[in-house]
Length: 126
Image (tube, rainbow, N blue to C red):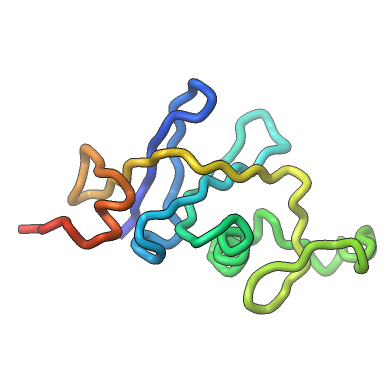
């Protein structure tokens, strides 16, 4: 089931796909992938920012920050950032992380609920 998150960031309404809904009790980090006209947002549940990057790297969306084999030569391995369970080389130059209140929505929750309420299992579905 696809879960999306909505919230207000710098006065703008944003929508983000939730990478791992329910994995960390609703403590959500909003990952912003910039470097283009319109940033892409993903919501990741994690205990802290570093763990959020690890979770994101290991997800199906991690390709946004993983450095490809053909581009590895452009990076100084000693001063680079590694993330995820496999300690993969990532590029965080155009990544920002925010912690703002988010509401989760899905086909069963069209109007949304706070992320912590979703993650606490307080929801009952018919």
